[in-house]
Length: 225
Image 1: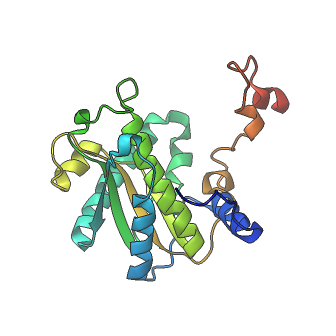
Image 2: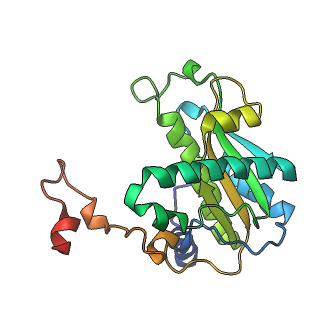
């Protein structure tokens, strides 16, 4: 048994909440290299994430080949164009957004779900998508640790998972879910970039919180009338 759980000091708590509050999905990087020791710490933070049934379904592929990075960026560009086409009247607005930072980030990591996940039943019998939730926790751990280190992270999801899997020679049953751009930044966005660019507006917590049953009205919409 360990000692009785004690809360962090006030300064430690403030630091944790600050990292959460100031985390940003970054697209603009300084182009400077990333200290290898920091990268190790970020990956270790990701690996310490909770996972259903302790299955640890995350797999990380560090992309160090420049040509391979360019090919991955090409896949992102293909999906960027396809997404723009699907947005109809917002196509031009979307194409003005910067959706990835692979041109100047120090590191590119591909995060994937492992293969043979069907063997893991614990916690997944009725909710098989909990493996994805576990990998998302790992990415969030890395993201928050990076903010504490003063390092930017951008999660890119604009790609065809099958095409990226083929490019990286991933086994059948595995699935790429994120291309992470990681590296030093000159500054962090004051607000989420999509808010700054006028693409979307974050909803307040009270619009997404209910008690005992699904909310009968959309608080956010009511407040905006």
